[in-house]
Amino acid sequence: MSSFESRSKSRRKSLLTGYAHRMRHAATASEATVWSALRANVLGVTFRRQVPIGGSFIGDFVASEVKLVIEIDGSWHAQRGIADARRDRNLQRLGFTVLHFSVTQVECHLPEVVQQIRESITALRGTA
Image (cartoon, rainbow, N blue to C red):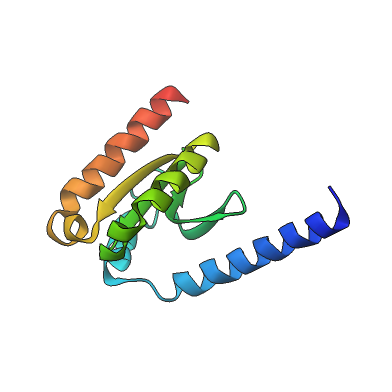
């Protein structure tokens, strides 16, 4: 890798980390609701919020132990279908499982969302 590529990669990582930090302090109401359900290791794994992954992506909630990414999709995701699908494929190549939940699912069906996350954790532990 040339020094230019190294500097460019380092700068991109720094920008991504800074952006993730800002996103943690500007959580949406749905993200705050999910965070309160996931924090403190209540599902047997530790989740972190707004985590840079692979130098190009930020996961809303990430449980590194089982390589699980939880995404809360607002209405603007409707216009990002192709980009979101590409992002998911890249995360899967890195070994992550990605679960998507809509804001409506979080607001109206939180217990079911948490149960689906719990079942995914159990399944991922079974395959580890």
